[in-house]
Image (cartoon, rainbow, N blue to C red; front, side, top):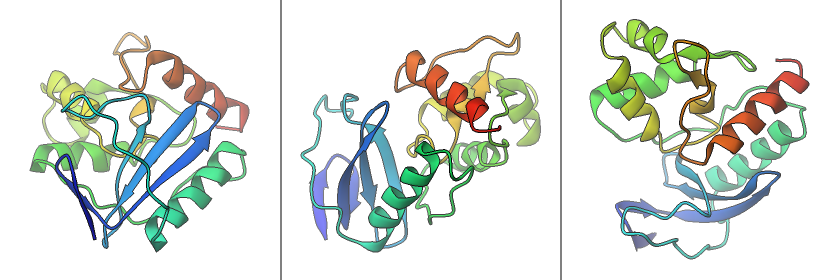
Length: 169
């Protein structure tokens, strides 16, 4: 098992070349733990070195990303190893319910997780989503319909939403 990068203990690492930049994949023996863009430093300000894709989950994630970016798939079913507070995990699971090509507001997610006044807290959990794209935090927008922040950059959020619209979302 590879260890020593930030808070993650991973059994495999990979780098996926996407149309919107390199995506780092981190997987444990339980599933994909993290996907993030290679230009996003970790909390220590470092970008971890890439390793070989290795195990089943990292390889399966790469295959499913290929299908998503080529427009041949609108969903992911790779196992996830989501770790966070109870509230964060509830928000991330709610994000998985947003249909491909659709957008929901932070307020709608807050109501869905039983905390209708917690739109800001939903925003915080959304920002800490460890599995970008697969857990579709890019599909969350402001209550007024505006595109709001995205950890990978607002241009990527816009690209992903446009991609999903082009692919029949």
